[in-house]
Length: 63
Image 1 (tube, rainbow, N blue to C red):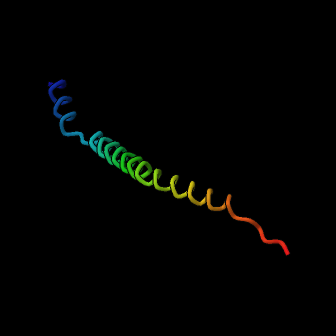
Image 2 (cartoon, one colour; image 1 turned 90 degrees about the vertical axis):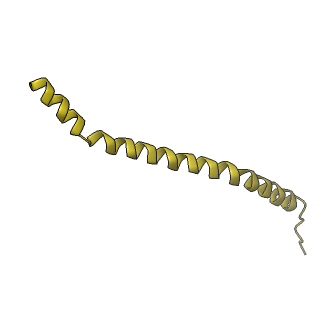
Image 3 (cartoon, rainbow, N blue to C red; image 1 turned 120 degrees about the vertical axis):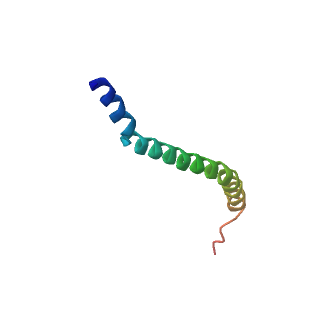
């Protein structure tokens, strides 16, 4: 009977369920962060290149 009670207690225990929820939530946040980084990264790099080329053609006007 002791083994049966141990199995029943194991089925009722919900401590691990909270851990699984946090792992899934953290994975979703990391995935969204990576997706945003890749979608914004290309546009940011293109803009930085445009700014760099514009600044390299500028001359300083000394009097």
